[in-house]
Length: 159
Image (cartoon, rainbow, N blue to C red; front, side, top):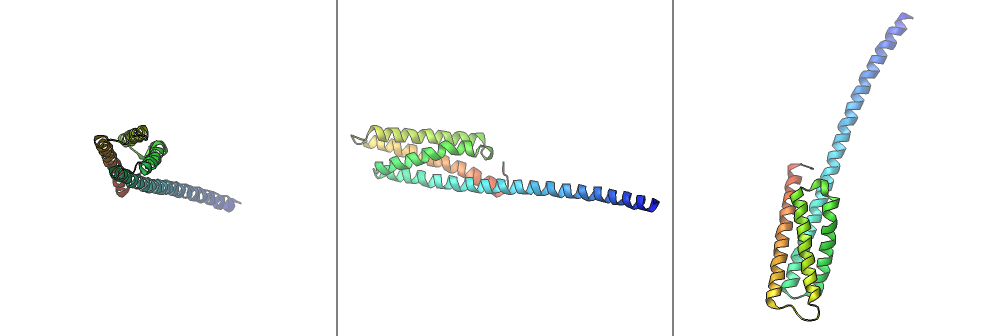
């Protein structure tokens, strides 16, 4: 009977040890899964920003070629995307980057409002040049945010 108690005690201690090992392995797996999820979200954010940058560049091109109908559609797409992105991706963006995205959204909204105001009569060359300059600043700002996100992604920093 005493042998049984000794074997049972040793088995209990080994079971406790194995349980601790399993716990720590599960913890490491959970941390790795979280890091992988964050990396995927950062990659998706980088891709979304790249698409937004390309669309903003198209907007500048549309404005420079007086294609205001296409510019209006592009402004609507950009404003929509930039309205949602800072909130959805907030944990993965610095406060300055979020503010840059929101500022760009407001500038784009201003471009859209100007185009709408001049639907009946054409925009004069100085007004068009101003819109092109604003669109260029938006592109530069978006590229800066995109570069910051890509830099974090390459460095392996998720937050």
